[in-house]
Image (cartoon, rainbow, N blue to C red; front, side, top):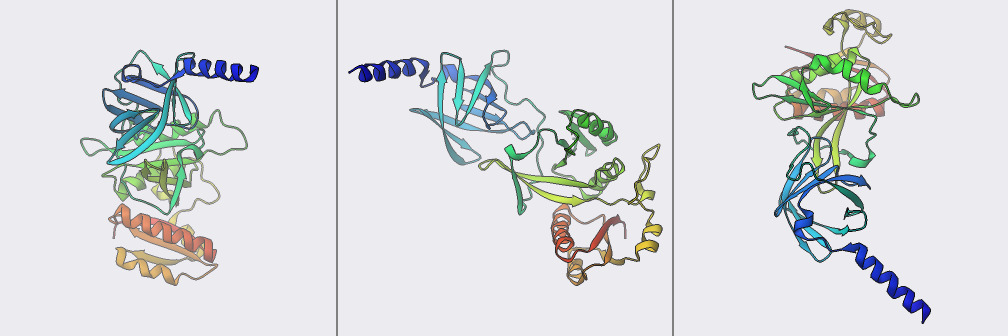
Length: 320
């Protein structure tokens, strides 16, 4: 009998602490407190706005059904558990908890939105697997079709990248070298990418990840690994940075390594790389007019060849 009474009291207590949330309580902006959920969720009437913290907001409609929320995001129906604790004023959404921002109840996004180029990849990484010590650079074209980057939610010129990377590395642990993620926006061309590569190479970031697509349902980024090599005559920073032991002028590189040179003027030339031999040196000359889609396909193929054939492959972008 005592156990039954105790069970009833616990049930009553839980019912008083947690209840089904109503539409009025739900309205406004909620920020992530704990768990692995999205950075921010906002509700306005029957609309929902989700911000994952990487300038990739999503919106749609929703309705409540018992202790669940049913959402229609990009014509994809998803469902999650939802309830509200009166005791600590916390919203439980899926496996995460959120607290309410009362200073901005109708916000729909907190960061500048970037429209990704939307190219899928064989390589993916879950949102929660990304280290928050890493550096995130969003490469975009503005309304005047000028090349810009978004750094710490501020749109600026690419020459601000070195100072951004230096400041971003200041608080990292000595045993962790932050990765650099380039988010590639729509309208970005290979020539724009080369300009970013030149600056990144100059500050000793030569292996980066290109983020090209975000899968909302699975909360995963699609990415491509890119090995950067820029010849010293192409580095235009003033004053130029001290060269590393692997930095060469083009003529110097060719004299030392005597690489086989393959010219890629279009996707029809991709067959050339199938004849790359193991344990050798190659210089791949890629036309700057190649599309981003074709360049990423080529990058994926070359990365596989590097790994499987243990071949040194350097890439240059040129105008044929």
